Length: 253
Ligand code: NAP
Image (cartoon, rainbow, N blue to C red; front, top):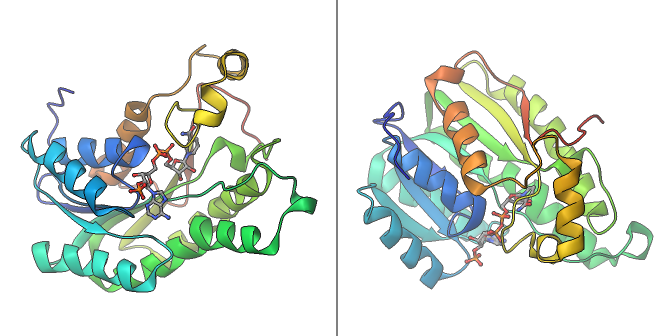
């Protein structure tokens, strides 16, 4: 991707779940706009491969293994950023799980716990670790979902956890302002591994495309472009907001 704008020069970004899909595209875009990036995911090999890919594009990148519900690994992700770069300017909380298509009334308690732990609690705990290192003018970006507005079949409880992130964004923005802005992105349907159970099915894919006004699914680059904007000083008067990037799919609560 050719990105000429260097509006994130001198900034340091930490991105969770960033070895593929939307997270990797965000890390790449922030890096191409000049930020030093700290990427992470559960598997060392994925982290190594992603760091290599970013460095090959001239991006300053380091990686850490971080399963977001592991307290030690969350700390080590923040430590990696601070040891390498001294502070943090951008934190993107991107990890999520959708372990089942069961309805809410059939859902096992362990599955409910996993959904809340990974999709909501881990973002809060990671921010608690990161907060002392966030500089004035910093930006937190939480990745929610269009399913947070429409928690439909197959995405029900997952969608409810994503609705919670809309509230979390508003609450944290108040708590962390004025030095740190907190915003949220609600992506529409993007063909990644995470969404493959929907987007690999030709009929569902067509139906999801039809729902948009733009008449296509989203791309990881669509999400990354909005993240780079929110992370930059171009968005310096924007906090406590969610930007829906869903091609016009209905997004009212
Ligand atoms: P993806 O392409 O499947 O990528 C998932 C990434 O997360 C991988 O790098 C994976 O690497 C890492 N990961 C998975 N579980 C993790 C965990 N517990 N802790 C840390 N890293 C973890 O997924 P995606 O579609 O980009 O999804 C990213 C975010 O976008 C999620 O929050 C999702 O809810 C949201 N979203 C996606 C869509 C969509 O249509 N794709 C729509 C709305 C919202 P390892 O396997 O190495 O851990």
